[in-house]
Image 1 (cartoon, rainbow, N blue to C red):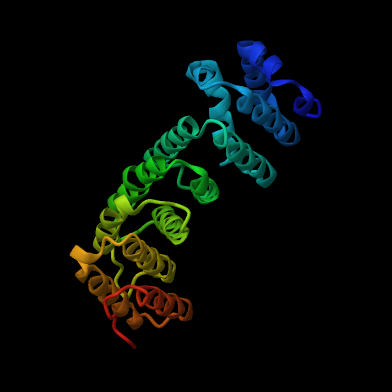
Image 2 (image 1 turned 30 degrees about the vertical axis):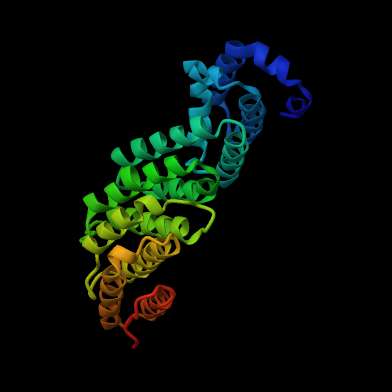
Length: 276
């Protein structure tokens, strides 16, 4: 990892499969500290490669190792992996963006054991970090085909702890994406708002679910307003505001703050919202 920054790109391109096979052999047996160094090596190697090189299965295995590093149990490894992804997105945005979507979809379709739901939280942390640098089309796919679809399957009745944590982390991620003006996903905002309204919590739902659902819906609807596509859906603001206002029946302090702030966010849209 010390010498990699000084190695010319032409040399890194020439080592090809030899580096990839060596990297994977070391990765499988490496301890935490060594994995951070290997992540640095992977970063410089992947950045140096051409688009054509990313068709090699052995190179994609290196990229997948970086993706898996973002859900590692050690925080320093996760940090190194996210840094690596951000660097590689600068040179191979479309390819890496699509691989991030596939990685997230595979993870959420095969959830971890019930005693280990932390990897989903780590995955959502990675998405929040890299989404502003991903291609808009990939972020849109990530929202509709992965996050929203998973949330729709879980539904508002999040009985088990793992499902509840997954739903809350997805909602927090959606809020983060729609809050960020650099991420252009207005094309999927209406679909997302529709599913969020389907998954509206009851006043008796957990404070965590309510506190994450309300701002996710509010920022989603606001993103539609910002993109100037609310003309034909002006009732969406009123419907969202009504759904959020019902949650004042939940008296948990954190929930009340979240609900109030969400209504403030909706007040930025052109349709009047209820005042409480």
